[in-house]
Length: 106
Image (cartoon, rainbow, N blue to C red):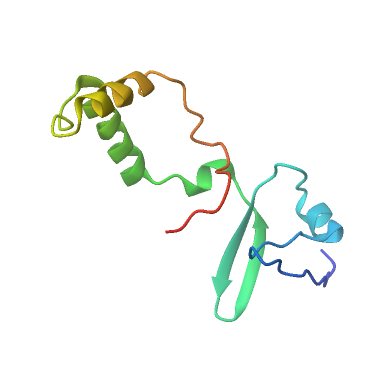
């Protein structure tokens, strides 16, 4: 692959738009995923595989939490209305692969 050098500007929200030449070279389009790997002072951008970021520990924890909420276990100290709302929401379908909208502080 020939070397491509493009410059992108960081917005006030810390976002960038991948230049068209980079998107084309990676084969990604609207809704596509890219991964950023920091290696020393370099950032490597690659097309992301959907399954590459699955964390089995988090998946197991979420499954345990879902089971506890569904059965009402370990949530009894919460207000009754909140427990009922959590149990009702537990049966709603959730797309865990959907993008999170808005800013997220970790």
